[in-house]
Amino acid sequence: MSSARQDQRDELWASGGELDAVVVGAGFSGLYMLHRLRDRLGLSARVFEAADDVGGTWYWNRYPGARCDSESYFYSFSDRLSEDLLQEWTWTERFAPQPEILSYLQHVADRYDLRKDIQFSTRVVAAEYDDATGRWVVRTDDGRQVTARFLITAVGCLSTTNLPDFPGRDSFLGDSYHTGVWPHEGVDFTGKRVAVIGTGATGVQAIPEIAEQAAHVYVLQRTPNYDIAGGNRPMTAEDGQQIKANYRDIWQATRETAFGFPYDVANRTALSVSEQERQRIFAEAWERGGFRLGTTFNDLLLDLEANETASEFLRARIRERVRDPEIAELLSPRDHPFFTKRPPLENGYYETFNRDNVTLVNLRKSPIQEITPTGVRTTDAEYEVDSIVYATGFDAMTGTLFKLGIRGRNGLGLREKWADGPRTYLGIATHGFPNLFMITGPQSPSVLSNMPVSIEQHVDWITDCLRHLRETGRDTIEPLPSAEDDWVDHHNEVTQMTLLPMADSWWVGANIPGKPRNLYPYVGGVGTYRQICDEVAARDYDGFGRGSGGTASDGQFTGTARAKFTDIAAATTAS
Ligand SMILES: Cc1cc2nc3c(=O)[nH]c(=O)nc-3n(C[C@H](O)[C@H](O)[C@H](O)COP(=O)(O)OP(=O)(O)OC[C@H]3O[C@@H](n4cnc5c(N)ncnc54)[C@H](O)[C@@H]3O)c2cc1C
Image (cartoon, rainbow, N blue to C red):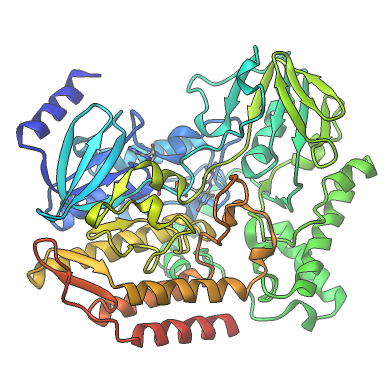
């Protein structure tokens, strides 16, 4: 540890470790939260971060081809943080590569002098609510502890890697990598035989790049996805000028649309237009690249027949690009509707299967039996390789929260409370855990949105909430059980209106053995959700109990918020 970091620690412990707020994580969420707590509210706050620098996702995911799937110009902090920063920063590619996003977040940390309140290389291992003092006692992996009135998790939805427990996994004598914890010095695959396990969003980004270098790549696929053309390209000076001239409108739009993009779902159904017109609309969106294809019709996520038109459009694109019809068919999803699993964006992925040094292995037909010292054995062959790349994703949404060892009132564990699936109010707080806020927690739009927009909305809402507590002379807030029950019911109702429960996706926890099957993110839409949260705040934090010194007895749930959010959701779904 550097001596500056040691000094920083010593200073905190000398102060007795008493803080207003502890924030866990220093990615987009933690950086913005710290800025708001410290520089807007004037609170004493400390961020604990397991990594030795800021960046979160963009610190850890350094695999070849890693880049954002949201377009760069709206994958950043908005004018809520700074209009100047938007004008000063220039993205070089339409979908920024990992090093560029990381240097953006490092720049933000420096610009707002955030590092001095972030304790790096420190993992939070327990956070327990002390009923007697009404404070959170937060313990870190260096054996120390601090206390804070508020505990704010900024741990991200995708920060606990999923490494499947294949028999013999640790016997492999070559090199193994997980895309989510990639070596900082990079990996040279030149001349190597490589097995890549997994063809989700990260696999689809990494495989074309690895295939450029390696002697041979075995792509081990369980489920093919509907990969959408990314259409990545350098940003021109003209692009930059146009975007910068319109930033205010762009951000306003992101806050109102369903997915936090500056373009919304078209107000028409897929079957209301002719086949020819539908193909024209799909083709136009395809040409433009990115997630626009998912916004071409408003019933793609609601109606199976409508969805099949998009699914088939995408399968036809695979057949056009992959020369061998059998491989094209293996790459074509048949077991789930389009967008019921996170569709990866691809840049040259399908053409990779026309290369002589790439073999597609169908794990549906012959699953992995074991990892051997020299490779991967499926039920019908052994693939001898030098390296294995696990592109097997994350224990999303709850995995990292559970690892924090959170215990609320009367020692109630978060993991135990959520044994059958998350129970939250607005996806931001949960009954029994006073003064705990979860940025992009389960049952909020989170991973079903352009996340910086959802992150900012949560941070701003929490900031306003803390200001409200201070102005009304309280320091404790906690959801009422009735409000939580209503939110969970509403979340489930909205989920059931969609096709999302049909797929075995990580969105429903299907990638983790034993994980309760629920839709983890909220699918009611970013704009709708924002209105609901604002309505709750405007109605004197309807559904939250508030008070002082650890009790949150002063509060009611009038049901008006419930009526309101059902109305808003219905109106948005209909439009
Ligand atoms: C490869 C990849 C591509 C993505 N592309 C997009 C995209 O195009 N658009 C989009 O909207 N989203 C995308 N995402 C989602 C991405 O995670 C979010 O956009 C965003 O970066 C989340 O920021 P965050 O600060 O909330 O969490 P993170 O960036 O995940 O940061 C959380 C931090 O918490 C730290 N932490 C966790 N537990 C502890 C602990 N116990 N103690 C201390 N520190 C801890 C972690 O080390 C991490 O640094 C992508 C994710 C991945 C993995």
